[in-house]
Image (cartoon, rainbow, N blue to C red; front, side, top):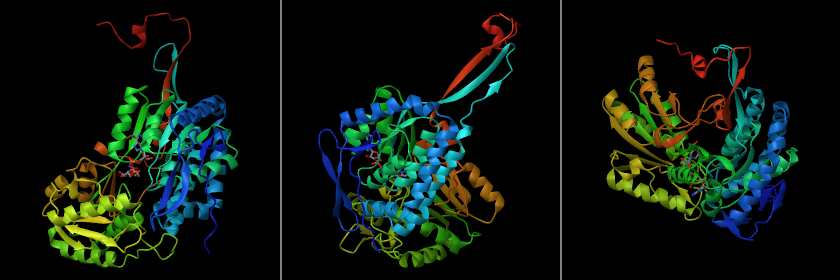
Length: 497
Ligand code: NAD
């Protein structure tokens, strides 16, 4: 039975849901039928100022708590997310189309796990110590930035929320978060849970709105000391420029991908097809790490294509609330049109093997699609399609495969399918990406392993203890002891020649 949903639609500042000062609202649509779900309040520059002031006001006492106390809040929030999993899943499904069952299986457990993990890391916000300089005990400490701005996309809002909010808060920062204008409802529901978990007012704030003016106001804000962003390469570059032009705030970026899967003849071809299919079809292909390019050895290409085609033919498209649905709609009309345009480019430059059209006439559905022999110069090959579309090209030898795999500006994830151990290690070493899957594809991920991109796929690493480093400044403290009053040179360990 479908539950009646309550929509929080206002901004969340100082633990209260408040209207934007200008009273502006924008609609949020359901991509399964293009109907309006609700109108959401928009934050303009003055609202971002209000949220930053609230976060600024809360910083001193929040950062002064013990690690144990901050961890306790995170643990309580994780428990509340678990309690309200069904409601959170339905809110998210209504705005960006991911199936409720997938959200309950993947996004919500991931968010709970990340909050619990970082609660457990609270005592690992640590520096170093050294007795290597005579008459000194030197230490370094990690301290929070102050107010941090977190900007997240729509394709996995609750996961991105947890990846950023949990480490930022546990390190003692206070937060202003901007969810995507396409999917703000789950973040607003999570804000209500933050309040229920007892977090002090001002520690966590949400400003709804578009890239401009809301996101830009954050990137330019003089009191925000750090921005952590997940989204497209173009927006990541724009935010970096704004950060540099304002107060040179620290920026970390998780950006797009065009992840290759390389399949050798000695691999389990059926398993490679299963992994590739799941990677590109779950969440309607809207996964930054999805294997959108397959490079398969020419001797097994037809076998692989046959297996992949069979799996793609069985994909059940439908409404996100239907438990039988495997692939929901794309996030909105604009996203669907973008995908269909690039499919047309791929058809023109290569060969259509499967799918290739809009599915149905209502909602923003795209058929699972396979394109083959698309040249590396094609826009369809170079651009992130961010839909259920995979390009399958063939190769003759290892060097050719490696050159093509590394031949893009992205570097988020790569997969290699082989049973040759030495080849697997050679590829793991030479592939230019933040992660490599041997005989597996995304969504493989581990909370205690770093996640991030090489090249234009990003800067910085989320998850694991690396995630803590994104939210702390490092300070060195020189503690002098004893009677030695020698010059600085002594402490550099310099010796006269
Ligand atoms: P997007 O860049 O359009 O938007 C992301 C967020 O940035 C939204 O909240 C948006 O409102 C905001 N934004 C847009 N313009 C802005 C500006 N000028 N200043 C400040 N904020 C601005 O991306 P999207 O379409 O929401 O998300 C899809 C993209 O995210 C894909 O490229 C995908 O690969 C990427 N992504 C990457 C990862 C990762 O971990 N590397 C994870 C998920 C998604």
